[in-house]
Amino acid sequence: MSLEILEQLEAKVQMVVDTVSLLHVEIAELKVKNEILGQESDTVRKSCDVLEQENAHLRTNQNAWQQRICSLLSKIEEIE
Image 1: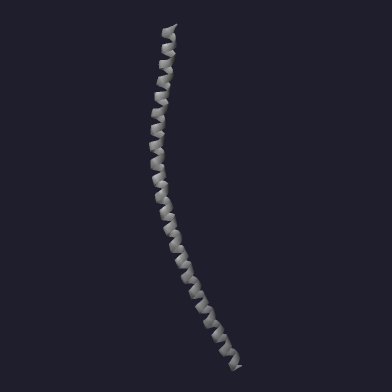
Image 2 (image 1 turned 30 degrees about the horizontal axis):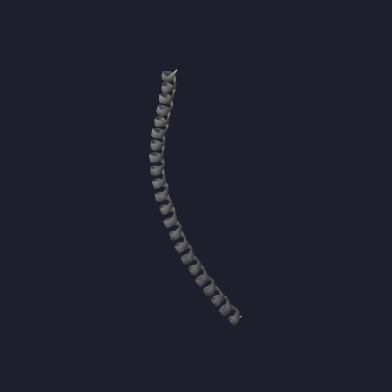
């Protein structure tokens, strides 16, 4: 009876060791994925910053053009 219990214990210990080994592998894979996602996040953040700057520049240009057009329209109205 004692040998049977010892074998069951050994089987359970082996199962725990296998599970821990698999979890270590999974943790290593998740660390790699996390690193990749962090790099992708940085790239997206930089792209977003560039787009925001470009958007601000385009809005400034648009406002300048609107002011010039309004000025020209005012001059045309003065002539009439």
